[in-house]
Image 1 (tube, rainbow, N blue to C red):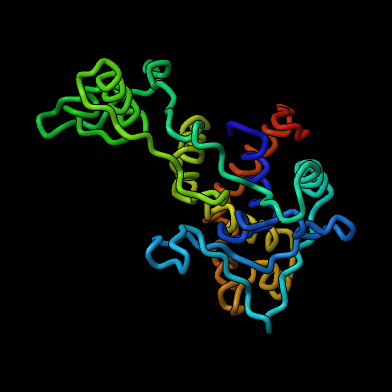
Image 2: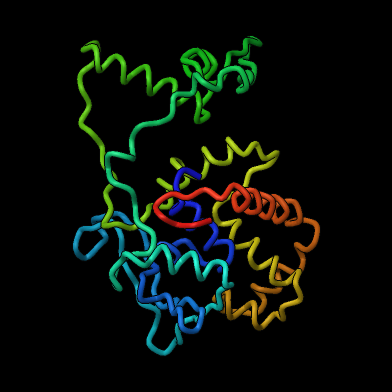
Length: 273
């Protein structure tokens, strides 16, 4: 993960099991340090601007008045990390915010990894091409992150030399909330590629892993239901059928990644690991 804030977002997701819209709408005042809890009372939804009453991209929805906010207990570890992260923020500030527009567009040059990326799938004529190359994108028809990055670099170079018309700079249309699609494309997928996991893990799988951890540790169904915010107990019961086999690999991998991150002890943005 590129920054301490991003790592903290992922770790918070694992340790709380929040939905994406709940996670990225967390504000400093939702952090109850006195009781070691997070208060979850809102969710943000990403919508098409024309459907927003103010023509914006993110719509904040308060949970119904007759529904009590969820209060999630935090481990001392994640509580202290969140407290340090929130120390310089105002009470109404988002805990996790989208980065400046200048940090959004550039993609890492895939050329440094060409020796380890391997070859594309064979074309109908049996030809293969190296991942992370223009040939892989155009002739091989590969649309992986590395081949798309090579094509993007090629187009950018043509625009820089005047061979192609300049393109209007694109910025992330956000009020500070982190777009799920942007996070998946720019942060999550590159991190998975770097980790080299033998299977794909979705961001939403962090929520599944959290529920699986709770049930594996002996938590009762009603407590897990309340913590996860499930409307029906039958939803929570579905996790019983995935343990220990279906989620075992994902849970072990996520736990391993988390332990390696802790051992590295990286410090970005003043957050101690």
